[in-house]
Length: 293
Ligand code: SF4
Image (cartoon, rainbow, N blue to C red; front, side, top):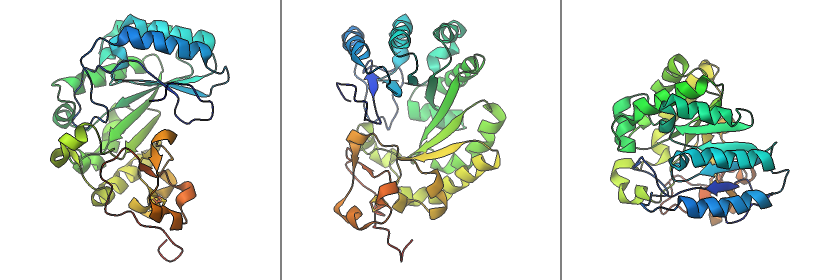
């Protein structure tokens, strides 16, 4: 995470705590049990106060930002006062918003210029809870989504693809259409091979080459329901060409890397590249040429 706000970066975010109330088996930044909220609040207040006034977007991340409780709202109000036009991207597991009062207090901070990125690991509660390692988290996240929808918040559903959830990906579009039609867009995300993924590799790691079919069916399903869908963190050489229009340059600039082979790839300019932080890369990385495209 950066210590400064850089107007030219695609990833300016306030890291608000390393604590979390989930224990996701593939977490790229495993939570710590330390009381760090005041420390980060002081640091982030200084970052907000010194941020360029025309900053386009500012993330809020952790850990789980709602563990700040009421202090999250104070921070949002400070951002609003200092950066009224900046889009805020709040990454949260959404569970705290199962409490209607907490959702209402967020709404009182303003519902414009804020997008909530909320992970939904599966359409099946058992799989979701197995991934978060918190029983009941699926129900709380869904309730949180409904409470947020009452206030018209923009919501991005985030699905990190692992060995534990890839088989049910094709079922997700129907589930979202039927149960969460208010969602603004869905991001299907490649896994970063770091953090808990290293420890739990047999359980969670799957080479993206091995779920191309399920990913393709999920993207097509979202398109069939006219739901906005994007593919994050997967380089073009790991995707069938039909999915390239959905692939975004999504990896934070400070985390993006390319292999020497990428220098010979005609798609490099449009490719998201690879996580520099990943300890293992796919077996399918190959330079795309006019002949192989
Ligand atoms: S070879 Fe490199 S630049 Fe080309 S698609 Fe693969 S990762 Fe991207």
